[in-house]
Image 1 (cartoon, helix red, strand yellow):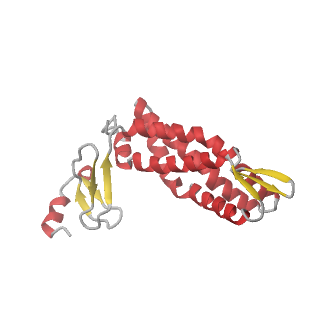
Image 2: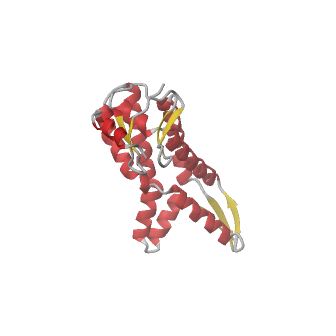
Image 3: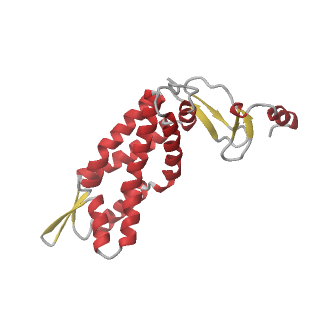
Length: 219
């Protein structure tokens, strides 16, 4: 806990020199970080922000890799089911269509949004935001899209869909002959890349870069 004198000294500082902890709301003087250093809240230990190297280039590479994996992850077979002499290839898209044709239109829409539409929109927003920083153009649009991206973050639920696939595999393995498809590998790779991207794409550095204070965002 900072003492009252510390709080009084913070009162006269401009806002761009202050940072508030997202977990415990402690107001702190913004520390100056070197490359690959991170700032933590002294009260709760939450990571306030980090200063990672080559944020834009590394994030762009991950976004492009994720976009390349998007189509095979959603349209290549996740698993192949062999039952009573019949074969069926199951994909993420065929799962959505199957739910809709079964009369569960609402569930189909939710699955489509959370497993296909919103993850794609998130990746496209990240791509445009990073390009506005890299090319130093249209940063006002980048700011708008990055705010929009943060509103969508909790709606992309690839990990929930993956858990559903794993549960289905466990339940069906004793009832029919199953073989895993290339789509499952692409889907897992897409999920891991998106998690990695969340770590690499430091929000603090992206906001600073979009505001024009640091063109290279930690390069």
